[in-house]
Image 1 (cartoon, each protein chain N blue to C red):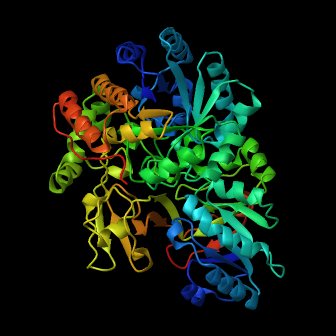
Image 2 (image 1 turned 45 degrees about the vertical axis):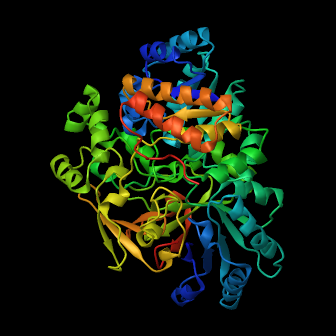
Image 3 (image 1 turned 90 degrees about the horizontal axis):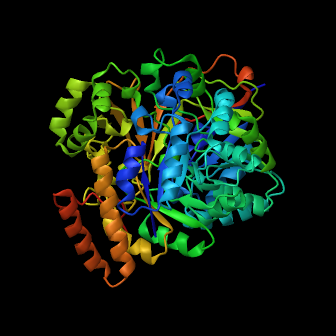
Length: 264
Length: 346
């Protein structure tokens, strides 16, 4: 049975949540400036309880400042007795922190750490690659037994995966997987191009002041060498892939995560 | 503060050792690996065959010569290794352990677990690919036996200084020259080296003739309209990395201006002016990028950074005086003025 989840980053996006879903993902993956407040997290958790949805809190990669912003949110989640949240980590330091805090809810390894090769140009050369190389590009290091076992030891129970254009291969995968669609992330920067689009006077190569342009605008990047257009939101780039793998069970994937918008 | 530089053959070592280097790093791309996975899935993330040593015998010789001059050798095992690679990977590790390398540069926690299980006794450096942005990650890696961490490129000076100050029991390394991509190395999932896959292509011919490096230097500095014409001519062939693509950019709001130029990286960035601060902050080591670069470029880079480290360690210049000194030295060595393509900003 495939669990259906929906991933939103702001409270305004509750409107996308329908009865099709049994789990709500809330939070951000790519920018610590967008980490929600305790109040926003409380609203999201209350919404999920009112709608009988399981709850997943998404965390981004973080500097020490970001860690300081996450700690009160973890305090809040620690104190929840009615509903225990799942937390997705995209930073090894956050895993270290949660292990030290003896977090006893569910833990999942986020897309930034599951290390699939997502660059669309693999589609241009797949016929030229040796068979083993193509198989390699469908896999992730997290399915190597020695790493899976280490992750399990650290409390990770599932891994978050993107829907690769070249296909996915997970032979003998130990960890259950969640598959995101339709947007797969490709790359991320701290030199935010969306921010730069408004602050042209600021040097592109420095970390710019932020007016949260990412919440209002998207960009499409097109080039003939790129098999699909890239979609830029904020500091991250994505591609869209609506075609889901046929046999999710064979990939040890038991959850689909729908992104109604390009994630922040 | 130590200087770590890249090499890809024995001759380079002979040329660079005279400059006064402390550590070298290199990768080995064997025929067996190349045949099974191609250069695109390189064992060490340098996809250009020319940027690698070609056997562990060659590595042994490099290590022996380097050790004769008191220089340490670090082997890059900084790719992400999937289940399909494990059998060959174990054979490669067997070959590696017969050499006397001083340590490994890794970015895959699976590789870290494998090396720890083998009790190699070698030092382990966490590559920038391990994405350390906070002190919690430093602790996480320290507990797993990592002795040095390479900073991500996307940190501000103040963030680097704080991490150094808060974690004095860890060695740290920072890039100071070349290879500065705006994307976060450990979180970027684009494939590199695509144009080098087919050796019959125009760009591969250029790569293997050694001309491509100079063309790349010209390409990244060219105005947008010239790049567009080059791209039209060369198509995908010149775009070995997705960060060099001249995209057509469409915004959902016409008032926001992003042009194709904004996506192009200048990989030839320089952190010369920052050496002074890094020495003050007690950075363990600074690193020059460019395993595939021509030896002439490597010599200039190593000479420039070596002289700056020596001057910084004298400790008698203010930040602004050091900056002036770095820019004058740049002009002397590279025969052109500083281009203000800075590696670090405050």
